[in-house]
Image (cartoon, rainbow, N blue to C red; front, side, top):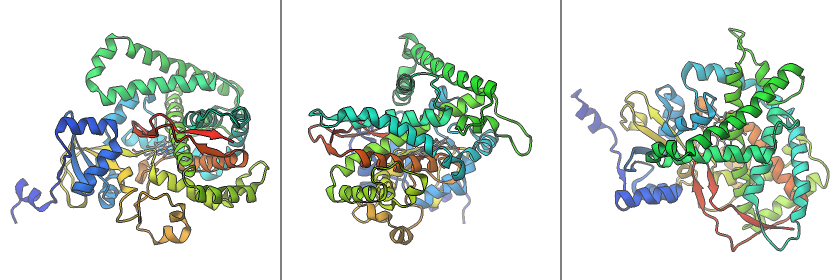
Length: 455
Ligand code: HEM
């Protein structure tokens, strides 16, 4: 057999160009609604195709074998893509962006703080944050005006993130912190989407504003680090756990800069994703009365009006299923970008060094080969016997392989708890006059929020 490049590529599967209309029209559709664009391409070209987005050619795949290859089997050949690197402007060298040896060392240091047993110690802090938040939520009850539940879920998830990270002491106003970071994120998203706007932003003051936002957050974080150092508290917060973590081999601890990077990373990676998952959950439940009623029955039978305990979560299986199904239909991390360091052959395809590959989780989660009636909201898909019967590697809201979400158990505990606490207290009805459209920036969120009436 011939050993030339042509022979090699002839033996590999061809990768079609995902083209719906013209290149510019496709770029516009992609920007307006990426999941929709990707689904239409998949329907036309299959699970793996090349997106020609004018400024960059990116390969999109929802082929489970391909995905396993790049995220797990041969993950060392891939680094995070350029969009992730833009996030590094704010998040520094935190876990989400770090690479290679340095990432591995950080992950080893941080991992114990996220062990299930350690996280269980944060459960009560989560319940306290939730109770405080839902008290003020009472003012919405019975109002004739609907509220934006997406905004509310962002606030409560931000409260929980800050309380579990740094403790109940207020180093700054939570809402103010959330808005500051959100504004910084907005700037980064603009850089990712419109790379040509970067030089202009250095002239028109947007970059300066971004730097100021990040500095404000830094100030809060360094104050928390210094206070914790002086008081060397024995509390259970993530900051304390990260400060005390030592490398088993070298005995080294994280520097203040590294702590800062990890804290901001955990805050950013952790709260908006959870808030979006909750927001989509309410969007789905308020349109599916039967499933909503079943959830209410479960929560009200198990918990009544009392404060939830950690042990209760195990007795709320349907609540868990609802959460999983919501993240299947609307995965907050809808796509993950990687860049190939060397030529590679995943699942019989050939890809070149430097190629950007997107794992299209949103496509995988609605692939009719693995999910019957994929667009249907059916929490029973996650009943244990059906999970057992399903093909493995087709559900991955938290990613796969060594770079899989470190906060997955944190998120599952938090989301399940908040759903239950809300069901205990309130009833929601969707404001059907308000448009709901998915917007896929860094995370998949409802563009104008989901609005509900609170009863
Ligand atoms: C529903 C909620 C969440 C979803 C859907 C989610 C999803 C993900 C995904 C898909 C990744 C992998 C990204 C990649 O491989 O490119 C990831 C990484 C990460 N997540 Fe989450 N996440 C959630 C909540 C959280 C929470 C609550 C925390 C922290 C408390 C967190 C912290 C992180 C960190 C630090 C990483 C980087 C891990 C590494 O590369 O070592 N996430 N997340």
